[in-house]
Length: 68
Image (cartoon, rainbow, N blue to C red; front, side, top):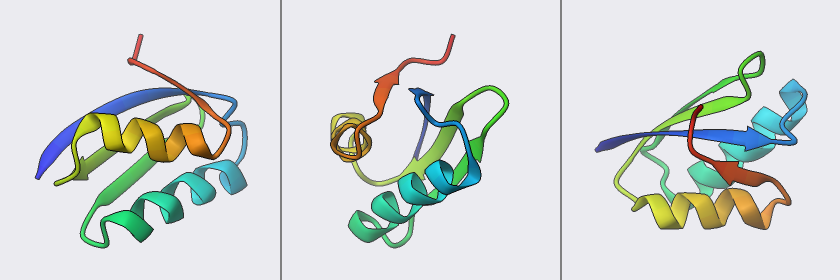
């Protein structure tokens, strides 16, 4: 697994974090997803490439950036 970290614009509550987590787990059941609402960052350990993870999150309506 590779560790990724993304800044998520629009992730404001635990519901948002859960929505992102569930979408990623649907595509990679072995992924480990940790969301930090305060910094609006999501850390993901996954076998999926970064582009796929970005697409999954973007499809939910969030803007995905690199952590700042």
